[in-house]
Length: 301
Image (cartoon, rainbow, N blue to C red):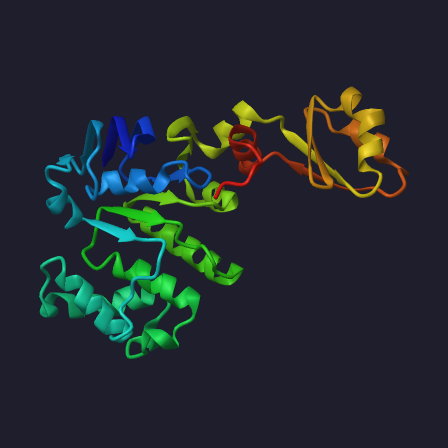
């Protein structure tokens, strides 16, 4: 469905995509993760043929990109980060106008609208102005709009950023339905729980490179100890001085919280018993632990 081989792209002498390989299989949701500036959005733009690579090859739906980018974009769906709905049109009119960009006639588009609005949970909003929609409704409409041409491959660039938990869960449900229908999804997200829930496979980018790939479970097993103990409170630093190096195979402090990564958590729990001024959280390792280990804790702007 999508193949990038040794793709590179530089701006003003700075290489932002540095020889990445990527392959999407039909009917999977593939997550592309990374901190700000890692090269994710540039990778999407390259795959869509909006910019040309400096080196390497790209094929989308078995077509060379950017040479056949126009034909490819007729067969894919895109949900960008920013809201691009037209405020001058109603919900239904946005779908009609967008469908015309794909060469569809209004006679072809109108019968598709009820199913798309049902899919987005907007059945009663066909005649609503865009300004009357909540943020969650707008994102769901953007997703429905991206399906107007019945695409085989869908690009989603941080589709749930800024949404409340209810709206996020509804969009997750809709994305799972798309995959169940055989659609292929390339998803970028900063939400690690979103990636774990939705993605069959994923890749983590940093500094323009693909630093690891695999299923969420494979990445957790390969890079992180199975148990995590988060210790926080006024006495956390003192507790770590006394017990940390003896009990924790690996640990790090971020702010007031110390993260202990363990294979056997019981000795650490025993040492915490009765410790004054301490609170702790015991949990299994997750994808966020992997992400922070591989890309670091520093802010990226």
